[in-house]
Length: 103
Image (tube, rainbow, N blue to C red):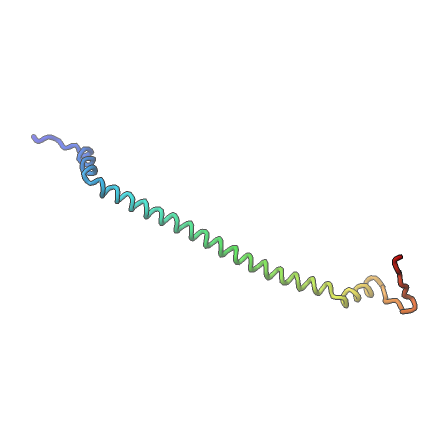
């Protein structure tokens, strides 16, 4: 009866005989995994960037609307109308005007 073959020892010897091929295989697999990880990270960052750009656009539009509203609220004719209607104020006649000077 022939001697039994130790499979683990045979695999180990075979790997030692082809150590450069094993090393290159491991380097190639590591490189492929790094490409996958970096690509996923890039996709996530690109998605986050696009969301931030959309938020910036929304905030810019809101800012423009607020500027328009501010300019509307600050118009002199509107302020004068509010003072006249809500506060009952009126423009004094020229005879009623008094000039205050600083000494």
